[in-house]
Length: 508
Image 1 (spheres, one colour):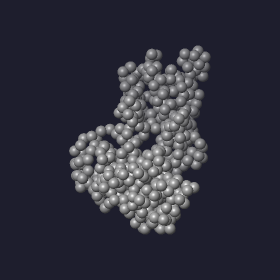
Image 2: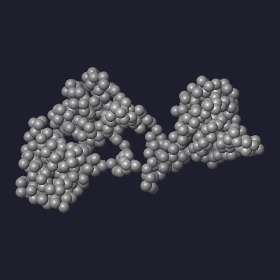
Image 3: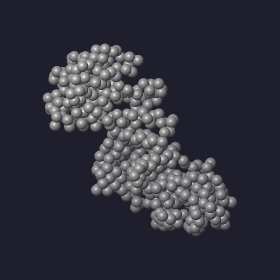
Image 4: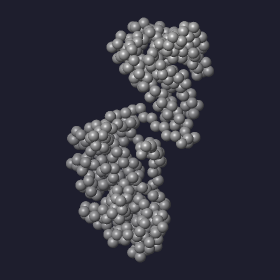
């Protein structure tokens, strides 16, 4: 373990928070400090002596600060190899001092983009000197310690304190790895900003915040969540979200987003809705959603798009469920719901961001647009002689929204404000329909006058025949089968209305 005492440091940072203890340590150990601009002033305010970089390079900061540290005396001091006789000789020849510690961070590019700043401001936040210093110091980790983020100040402080102002080779390699993570993440966000218009076919994903999960889908699988969950939710109660919780929460949030402007409630199990309903109150919407499948609701994920009040909380309190998501909870509701300490309560603060989906597959990755298409009555093309009534059209819209978020092959049976049943993830569309009919009957629903939604076309008329005999009076499907007319003919002969959307919603 090659331990090296730090004798000189270059410090130039945008964020100076919590830098004071580092300055105090460097001062204590007599470290020579080089710095620039505002950082120099900050260090001097801590009572430490500073050599301006301009004095080292004999050049001032030029071009509005775009060029400050880009000079051989700076990069030479970082990059020359202390165990290479030729490098050492050249450093002496050109009066290049060794720099043992580099503390720099990068201009806040991501934050500037997120703020909606004009492009000129965004471009100025593309760091050149900082990123070059980080890469140079990380490359020469055998001799140089690199701190590339304020998040690493505490770690550096701890190691310098424990090791009397020195770092080990293991320390320096660790900080180098962290530095390349910082630089690669930075470049990824810059590329993605430019690629919004250029559309270069390259996939760049970088998430720097990782949370270890208890396990993956099963206990023998390790798992992590990468991202800022705190941006989306405030957790008010309960244990940590598991891998399976996260998958179900994602499905729930995507489904409930279909019902803006309405009071909706949904209950999901293994990403599929087992209950969805609309009503005038959250309590009533919950009751109707629960009634669709009182068995599957046990251990499910619940979500609503309205504030959960005391009446709703008391109604659902007796049910064992894993997660409840809402935009807000009243104080009285929280008193009731927190009665079970492991129950996860999430306040959803924003809609899901992004328009792309990514998945690992085979020896690569597939990416696609999110399915953001949602059909309204205006998108219906009536295919049969009989047109659906306005009430049936409303019911078809409701059923189609649920169908879009259910695993294929799927069939949804409903009225205009309550899911009656679903057939999900079946290898045959007929099996999906039969499953849905049996389930509806099992929970006491009368299908006479109900509607049916299918995520894909009917290749044969068997589904509409089975549905018609069960009492279904209106059907929505994408159409597109070469045998569409067979289904249309059956509907015409049996007084069933059918509309087509031209949009398929497979979900695998």
